[in-house]
Structures are given as C-alpha cells and as structure tokens.
Image (cartoon, rainbow, N blue to C red):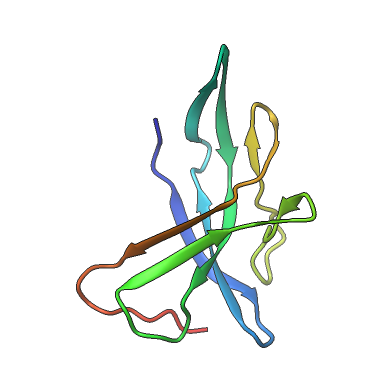
Length: 112
C-alpha cells in the first residue's frame, strides 16, 4: 500500500553540467508498508532523485535514484540544509531505481 507524496523540484548542481532533482516526501506519513516474511515495516522520510531531460521540450521524463559510496547519491538540493534519506525498518535505506513517464499530450520543459 502506498500513500500520496509531495514533489519539490530544485537544483542538484548549478555548475556545468547543471543537474536538477525532485524530492519525494510523504510528510509525516509513510511511502509504503512492506512485509518480508514475518517482518513488517514502513518506508518513511524523503528521497531525492535526478530528473531528466533538462532544457528540452517533450512529453516524457525520467527520474533516477542511485547509490554512491553506500548512501543515496543526492541527499539535498542546492541551498538546502535538510538532508533527504529514506528509512526502512527503523534503519537508513537507499532507493536505487529509474522511473519514466509522460506529462500528458503537451510538451513540457524543465529549464536548468
């Protein structure tokens, strides 16, 4: 079961090559409840992924979450003091995934 999350768009890196990201945050809630055998837990807190493409008008987008050195690749937007890390089973967790989708039939451009 999953719950609604908010997405915040911002810069990951402002020097070339510029990168943008989206924070996924369920607020005080839970991303998802999971069960592994008899162990039941929740995935909480927030996570930051890189959005692409930038500076191109199109209807499709991609969002990538990676691991770097045993932690989430991106943990804060430029200028932010808050750190975005997931927690699962009361432990630090890492999301490694690539999502893609479509805005709608109209083109959209994320400028960075």
